[in-house]
Length: 280
Image 1 (tube, rainbow, N blue to C red):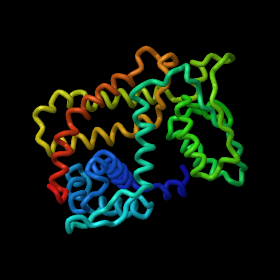
Image 2: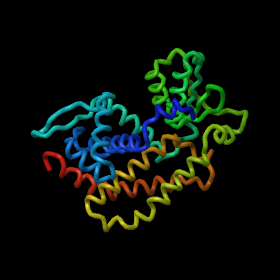
Image 3: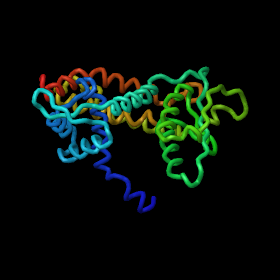
Image 4: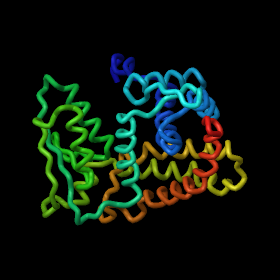
């Protein structure tokens, strides 16, 4: 990686603060009414391993991006989620929860082909990075593919970058030629995706046997950790049809573990968080 690109990337600690804050907004602030008291949010996130200065910096950056707006409630300073944040979080949900259920092979595929001039290389890179983060696989020069249900997400990504005129989007069936399994395995790093699911299982499976002994604060820390760790995984996996995956694909086992952890932790975790809101 070039020195310029390295310099442009935020430090690992800053990235963790941002990702954990986004997980907090989606998993805690939305259920609590789309508003958070800043003092309570800082306290809760420091319980999860961040320092107060990093939390406030991450909040400031999200405010600059239009995700948060200042708003007081019951005499407490805080921030409300904006429509921009709510839309982004909902779009993330759409991608994240696709991993719960494999796509139906009969629904077909969404293909995106684009022609962006060399002079707009940075824009082209942003589009490919966005498609990749949505779980699209690359099967040829400027050709990306995902299950057909990813069409709305692809349209949003293209529109956000103002590239509608440079992109052709198709939805259709596989009808022949190269074996579909071969195309899929060439388009995605399935081994890497499977490895990350297995790492999630290895990290959290033993914890699932000790949930009964957690107090509410420990449940909150575990809940946010699980959500934040999981949230990144399905962005590389669009929920491919089971027919194109190996029999020992670890995605379903990881999903079952994630669902069990969330079901057992969300009640005590949100009860703990509620104590830091004005209503108590």
